[in-house]
Length: 474
Image 1 (cartoon, rainbow, N blue to C red):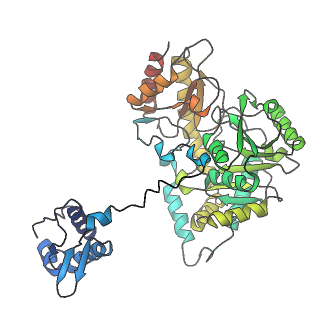
Image 2 (image 1 turned 90 degrees about the vertical axis):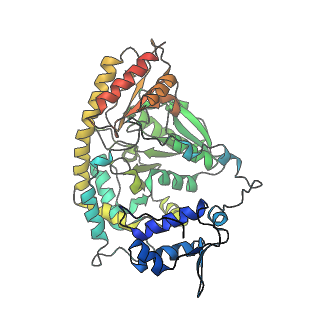
């Protein structure tokens, strides 16, 4: 066989042989019908065990790249390239319904890795207690402590629901027991479940402006008539809610993206409006675990006496987004329907991960992690605050905020800054930062995250960003 295989520096020899043979077939160096050496002969030539070569041959045969004939040998398949490149029919005559065609492609988002990443919504993975988490996952998998066999309660592992209820009761004053909690795969699934049981085509839904785009897109995809309601210094403007609104999505503890909390007066007014108009409030406690000053105002859920608030939370910011762990606290009248919707969607989540998180909370490790991470993020936050207030005071003003993983800085009335140009120029300088207009609203500005930029790099990143913003002043 006039085809060279190199195994230098590789420990998984079977995988290496497989890849090189596959690539040789795909690029035409090994032609259809060509006979390969017997496993014993190739193993002797490569100085590996015969079993190693056999494993590679068997995988290639199973995938259609090779064909094996007893007594004759192993040959390159008759049309391996066509088989490896086959795809489903284009289906040009089959189209999704209109509202799905209008939504942006999620894969169209920028997935680059800039040198200085000030994008929002992602915690620092270096702060995640990986060794501890590995121990808890291993503990959940021990034969002596098996997770429930078969299918489980769609609401999630009971131990985790009880732990979450206890945690949010102490940390956020949420009134809930384990039976009130439904475990979800992130906050987005919680919103989807709510929408499935409450939204019909044409249902009027209110969202904040500026606000959280994934929630708005989800409600549109479910057929809702979405109305944007302006946000001011006290939070969502209750007087701007349209008559006939049946569901109100809000982030009162740490408004996204501005960061301001909803005032107590506004919270009381919103609850009263919902009762008068037979509406439901979805309270997304977005990004509020990390607090840097006073204790937050009581959540809407704790002020609600009529069962009109559904409280949504997530561990994506406190732990890691890849764990896909969130929760939903719902009034008793909605729990059966939500359980049914969860079962029809995916039955239940990963029970091993749920068991690990239950132990993480019960052992006090979540509270300890939040305290440690808060100290770290506080340092980064203060440096961004100082930089914007000192170096960019003529271009941007910080929106007051006391929680979360990002800061919002708006262009003041007396200044004119080409924000889009500043963001584009920053990207060319290796700095990723987000344009406030991406989230709506009337004033321009930047949304600056500090979850992914460590203290050793933050000053250089801010300096580059400052140069781009200053250059964009008009």
